[in-house]
Structures are given as C-alpha cells and as structure tokens.
Image (tube, rainbow, N blue to C red; front, side, top):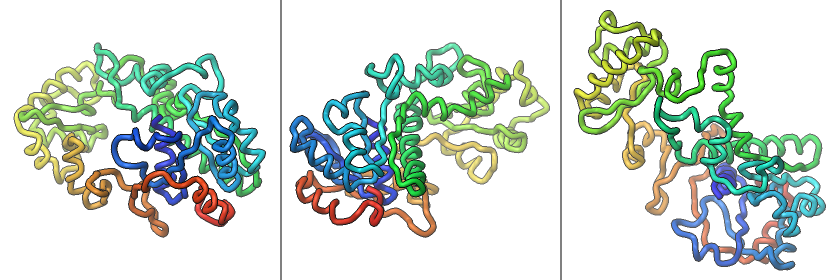
Length: 353
C-alpha cells in the first residue's frame, strides 16, 4: 500500500507523466488530499472493458507499477505476458514485501514483518529492551519504493540500448538487506556485534546517542570523529582528563552518565545555541511542526505548503531541469479522455509515463 504509490509520487515529482488506476469509488473513500503529482483514472479490472482500457494505456506507456500479491495481475489479465505483448518495450515493475517467489511469497505482511525477517529490526533499539519500530521508513520506503525507483530508472537506461522492456521484481526484504550493506560489512569484519544498543552507530556509543534536556526536549549527538568529540566535550564543559578515553568501551557507562548529567542542566534551545556554530555534530531533535519552521530547511525549501498542507519538496535537486512544485490532481479523469491523451504521443517522445 505504501511503497508502490510512493514510488509513483517520486517519479511524478521528477517529471514523469503518472496515471494512477484505481477501482471505482476509491476516491470517495479516500481521506486527505488527492494523490500528489499524478492523475487518477477509475477502472474496474473485473470487467473486460476495464482490462482492455488498461492494456490500451500500456501500449503507450513506458512503465507499469503494480503492488498485488504474486499472480493477481496474471489472473486479472494484465500480467507481464499480457502487457509486454501489447508493448515489448514496457518496464513492468512489481512491488511486494516478500518478492515474487519463495516460501512466503503469497503471505500477507507489513513493513514491520519484512524488516523483522531481515535482521535489521533486531538491531534497532536499546540494549536489554525490545526492538524499536522505526516507523515504516526502513521497509516500505527505504527498502521498498527507493529500490523500485532505482530499478525502473536502470531498466529505462538499459531499454535505451536494447529497445526491450523487462519485469522488475522489487521485494522489500531484498531492498532492506541491500540498505543494510554497511552493517553487514562491519559485521563481517568483526566491527559489529549482534545485540541492540552495543555498537557505535546504534546508540551503544555515548557519543552517538540522544539525550534529554532540562525542558523535556532532546539533543542528537553524532560526535564520532576525534575532532568532533573534542568539540562536544568543550561545549558540554567537560574536562577530557577527567573522563575515560573515547574508545574505551569499559568507560562508556561513565561517559554516558557524564553526558546525560550535562545535557539535563539546560534546555534544548539553550544547548542548540551552545552548539549552533560549533562542528560537534550536535543538533536539536525537532518535531514535524518545528521542522517546518527550521531556518535551514526553510532556506532550502525542503518543506513546502501546498493549499494548507505542509509536505516535502521534490528531491533531489537538479541544476538544469528542476522539478515543478508538488501539485495535487483533480478528481478521477474520464478513461476515454485519458486514453486519447496518452495515445497522442509515443512514449519516447514525451516524459516517461
């Protein structure tokens, strides 16, 4: 439900002409604003007319994205074989959690299940506490939509050489595992140990952690390198001669206690001011509402307001072809009008669609 639409949003933000096909009446049940950066067409794939319209659209498309369980689109008559027969250059992108094959391929699941099976969820959290749910950013969007978009763009580049389309099997379990390559590498060289909150990048190190402040706020500390660590101690008013060495693991509890006591002595805003112009890798932890007003994010227009809804701007940035601002589309379009518009230009003569 999340990564397929998010991948379409990303592609639409970057200039693709995106059409969302949904079952009739879905828009009436949808809460919140209409889909961003893509038009909507309601079609009933349970009827021959709906399936025929989808195949007609496919004939003029560069990419089709689907997020059903394996075999569903084949049963509906819009599977890879049906679509590639109409358009041999089509990129048929399939987004699932478990993948198109394997013992769990036909099972239900959500982000937390996919991340849990990869070992990544077990590594997130505090020592001695259960794993912490990392929103659904790691699975659905980190290992899901991100890798789906990478696959689509790579397939489009390859098609420019071969002229042939292909099927992409994007599975969240695969993407999350790839996303965790750095951790797997550290583990393989003995620099990472299983167990939460015991390593340098998982909150185990006192100089890479989050600390509460006097007013109930929090400060994020990422002072890994020696020069940043020295600046951290100076900002906190701590004498390094009175503390254990930075990389002395036996002294980490004492370091953590010293840092915690120091941060509790002032408010979050006071500590923000202390480290504002210091390269100590120390920053405040902001809420979403506060992030929308942050000076740096505001200067970059990282977050924009569209019709009263604050949302992220398209990313990344381009020097020559900047994306248009995010924009919602009106209600469902007439299928005949959509088909006529899509048939008006060949896929390669316009923005990818």
